[in-house]
Amino acid sequence: MKMYGIKNCDTVAKVRRWMDEHGQAYDFHDYKALGVTAERLKAWCDEVGWEVLLNRAGTTFRKLPEADRQDLDEDRAIALMAAQPSMIKRPVLEGAEPLLVGFKPERYAAALG
Image (cartoon, rainbow, N blue to C red; front, side):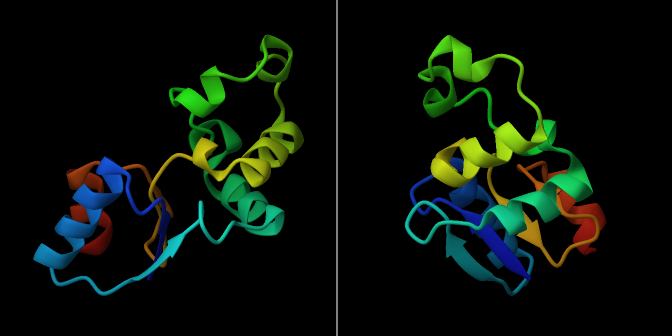
């Protein structure tokens, strides 16, 4: 499995702890430091929807000019997330079925046994 997130994010730290406590191996990809491709973002959007993936509650999104926050569609959301990865909800866990976005312990337990 591969976990995508930001190293110093509190939610990512909780998930990493949960994964370690439950014996789940994963590779970590810091998308703030290493970036994420528009192609990967598109694949995630195809699976869960851009509305799930885009972190509208974060400060990065809220600091955008009003014009950039209105009339969003998938293409514009992907462009925003690719340009500023901190707008991606975190973490994203690939290799679990289904793709997990964010952290709810019960969803992780159900998906990962």
